[in-house]
Image (cartoon, rainbow, N blue to C red):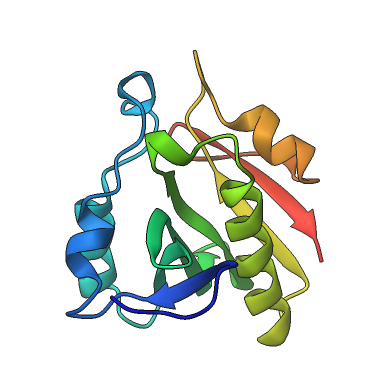
Length: 158
């Protein structure tokens, strides 16, 4: 993987970047909160029209992984017009946390969603010790009161 830009950016997962993406690992105390990148890539493979996986790099260095979900019917049996997009997965490498890469990745996904015409962004997250809820709240996401499985849903108006 050879790049020239020194600032953080998102790049597609390709044959050249897959090993770097799979090597991204969060801190041990966070592993119960987020699935590993390899699971995200498997989900992206089986949901190719929905998943938008990207490696977060700074210069030549992989620092994280983000995957958005795009234009899914949230609850088609109740309201097939309730189409949503947002953050599906965010993994920042343990060595690179606290440096703004998570905020950068969320903003980059939001920019992509706006480009695609979205007016809201959504995220779900695990609760309990170490929950990322305060991180997302600090970015302007507000709980909707809904659950996706056992995870709260939060929304950001774009």
